[in-house]
Length: 221
Ligand code: SAH
Image (cartoon, rainbow, N blue to C red; front, side, top):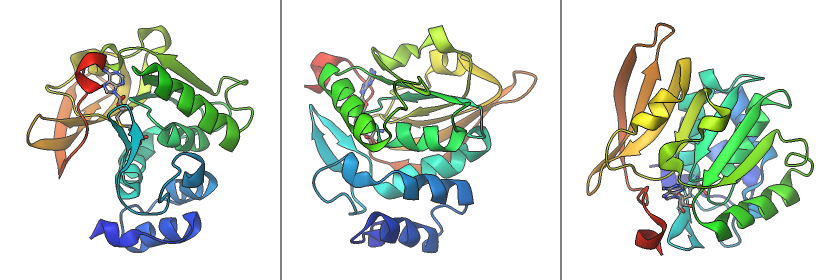
């Protein structure tokens, strides 16, 4: 199982995820090796488990980050634009930026102010210059509404479980574009929701998961 991928180093962890076939893309491997998890979580950065960030949030397990990068990979090509909803630690936001490169743009949106500040500090330490050059923009706000100011997006990642399919986010996808979103309350699954070049929307259930809810601030802390 995926949590057997734990290791003593970032490189070892990524190698284990690759051997376990959680991802296969070279671009994903390069991004995950470039962005060292120790800059985003203080305890057990190379354990393949979620870790608490405070404020009712967790950094997702490395295997979930790897799945997200792999499923979104066709929409993470150089120059593409990404929205990361519930960016938490900032880890995945930084990986997305590695993949879309300096010509691409990643917007991370998070509704807990302290976590926006945490992701800013983490990214500043790990990827100096990415915030100044605005290849990464961090926004404090309710991610359920997306971030229309920078839309449309080639892909949108949601790091918390929505109660229902989030229509505002589907509206903010390009055609073609892809949304990776956990949906459900007690029982949750990741859905890959694709908009094709004609604007037709299709969905595919990928796997059962357990994410923190996409919710209101006062319900989370
Ligand atoms: N991708 C992050 C996941 C963090 S956990 C990581 O791996 O570090 C989920 C995050 O979603 C939390 O930080 C939580 O504060 C945030 N969140 C929950 N509801 C939200 C909402 N309505 N708008 C924006 N962020 C939200």
